Structures are given as C-alpha cells and as structure tokens.
Image 1 (tube, one colour):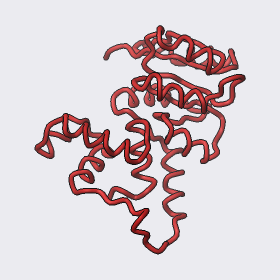
Image 2 (spheres, helix red, strand yellow):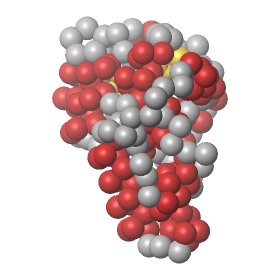
Image 3 (cartoon, helix red, strand yellow):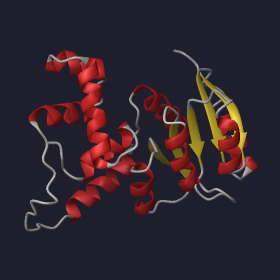
Length: 216
C-alpha cells in the first residue's frame, strides 16, 4: 500500500501529538504538516504534499467550518476528515454538504481513524455509525408532504444507476463495466449530479442522496 500523507490542524498541541503518536504504528500513514488553526493550515497546505487533512472545528482565527470550505475550493483533491468533540447533527449536515469527506468524534479509536483515512482515499468518503445514525434519524423524521413538482428531484434511469452504484462504494471503472458505458461517462454523470445538488465531492453526493431518499 502506498504511503498516505496527512496534515492535522488542531489548536490543542497535546491532542495533535496524541493523534500522531497513536497512528505511528500504521507505517503507511505519514504526517507531513501540523497547524494550530485553519489559516496556518491553508498557508502551508499547498507545499506540504498532504492528501488527507484531520481537522478540528473550534480553533482561533479561521475555524474548521470555514477551513473546510476553503480547502474544497482551493484544494479539491485533498480529503477532509473532521475530528471534533461536537456531536450536533447540524454540524454534520453542514460540513458533509460543504466539502468534508468524513466526520469523526475525538473519542474515535486509532483503528477507526486509520480506516477513515484509507477509505476517503480509496472511495472519496467515510460514513461511520455516528453519521449513519444521524441519516437514519433524519429519514424517520420525515413527514408525508404534498408532492411539489417544482421541488421534486427527478433523475433519469442512468443517473439513478450511477448514483446507486456510487453509494454502494463502486469505483467509476467498476460502474462503467457494470453498466456498459465508459468511465468518462460515469464521471460526467457524477459531476453533473454534484453540480445539480450543490455538493463539493463524492462524500457530499452520497450524503445528499441518502438524506433525500434518492436511492432504493
């Protein structure tokens, strides 16, 4: 397995060092940047070679929410994993729909952090039990509303198939082979759906699809 380069931003130095130390046994993970706030992270991210960012939310200056949005705009190929103490579902919705690739609580075990890092690199997103529980709660809380043709989300059969396969964690190449189309077509459909739904990455697309019951 190739080495995954990681940056971490958290204003608590002891916590930062603790995370780095706890992941040291996983030799395929390499920390290349530490930052105390979002601005310091952004200023150094471009030259760090980092592929994944572990990001706290509450930091002085530029907080994790604003930092996530900046990374999504300036460094769209860098994955963002939120690592925070905040369990409020409003944070989860907002971050996942604005560029975060996963959301972890600070009591997560090192094994889960390692798994999350590997999955956002291989699949583009990581949805753990915490996030899935919030999605399930949202789904159960929906009320039966009168259909509104203006707000109804209508997908073509091909868009539904691509979206369903993305949510099933299949790669573009696997989807292309399964559907008998090219990988470029799959990527084009995915990009079109992301633009249409206002999502920043694959994680946001999956999150949007599950939250809005777009897949069976």
